[in-house]
Image 1 (tube, rainbow, N blue to C red):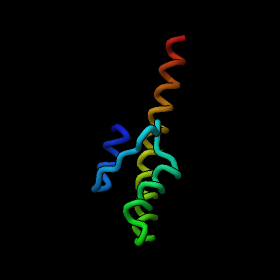
Image 2 (cartoon, rainbow, N blue to C red):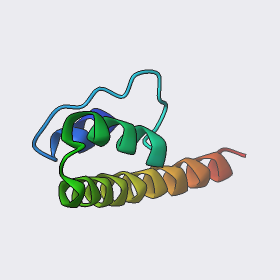
Image 3 (cartoon, rainbow, N blue to C red):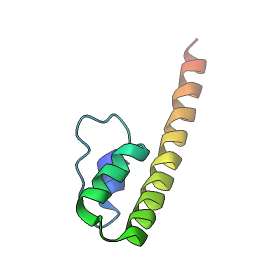
Amino acid sequence: MSKQEVINTMGKQYRVAGADRLNDDSVMELITYENAYNEEYQLWFKNEVLMKWNRIHKYNHSHDRSRRDTIH
């Protein structure tokens, strides 16, 4: 799953311009731009996206590391 696919699962498309990966700042910047009036939605969106992206990032990272170890 790509970063864009993770974001799309939240029900809306968000563009993270120039960001290699999601982080607190990029997620909060996006949701405050469009949903500044709805703090509860911001917290939900931030938690959902970070949870999914961190899980995928950790999975990819562990697989990258094991792949490097087997090559050497």
